[in-house]
Image 1 (cartoon, helix red, strand yellow):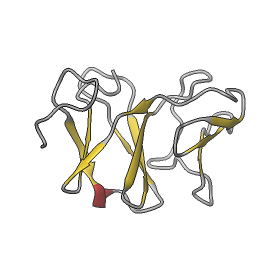
Image 2 (cartoon, helix red, strand yellow; image 1 turned 90 degrees about the vertical axis):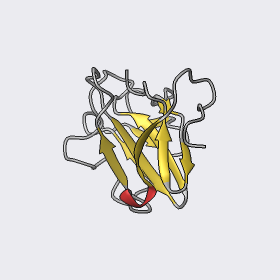
Image 3 (cartoon, one colour; image 1 turned 180 degrees about the horizontal axis):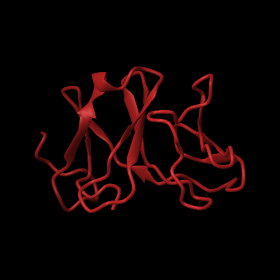
Length: 124
């Protein structure tokens, strides 16, 4: 149900995009909610979508400089452009780089009828 709450959320979810807006195996950046200075990004793997706050845990910079450029050349890892930190797509865990062992801030996701839903306050 589109109006139902995501687990642990006090507000109805907001629509991030449609699943078809993110090519399979690719990533896409999105603005945060009104009042936010930090955006979000989503990575699609088949019918799964992983959404994170676009902020490196090392120093808080955006992970990308170019629009929608979040992944390694082979699409296997999320890469921070600032210091080359590499993160697993599935859980945001940093495998290599100055924030090794830390994680990206994950955003809860639900997909309903091809619509990607996230908490209304994601990115605040």
